Image 1 (cartoon, rainbow, N blue to C red):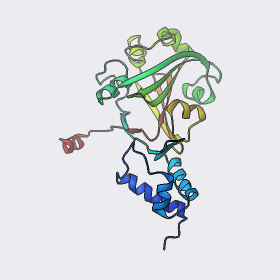
Image 2 (cartoon, helix red, strand yellow):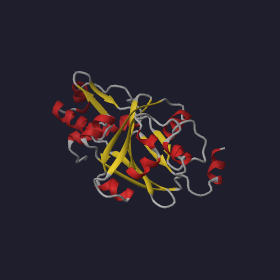
Image 3 (cartoon, helix red, strand yellow):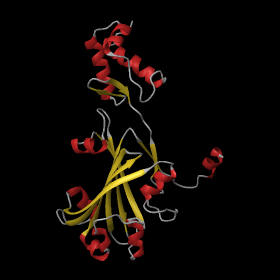
Image 4 (tube, helix red, strand yellow):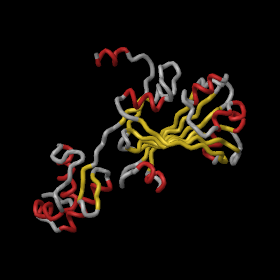
Length: 256
């Protein structure tokens, strides 16, 4: 005998249907009244089961339109190659990676002067509230919100590389630009975490209920000090990251 509450039984059955492609991504679920009849449950019970699937990010609800299975077209980012100058790129790494995946990149962009918060100041090894230049990108893949990227540069660096403060994109990418003016990024330190989104993050990335964001902080270093702190925020359900470490001939052989 199933001792789970009835609404969880409803959610479990519909989750299996979604996993088995009975209801494909983008398709609508039956109405609450139809589901009520299928499961022999009240509409309130069915509604509670559906709400559970909404909280898990599996379905979305629209007033007057019912429930729809969410599409999950995952983009895979190779974090080892991202901004690595030994790999050929046309423009910045984001545009190159998305285009190479056969998808279409678009972004909005802004530059502002802002004080460093404690998190950024610790990574840049500058005083909290000291001046930084923030280059902020809101990025899309095939018109779907993909990430926000906030890169902070210390004031001393901007004086040596003034294009960082100009209100426009750096066509060749900032890492290449800095290398061109003699400030080479020779290493970076990555930090990866996940949490639920802030209201602003949920708005910018169109994050559905129950879906976390993935935070990727990359601090870049020259030979003697940090030169930038980049905080990228991804929708957790639409992105996957990977790294390449060491020689991977055996892996490549498996794929041939």
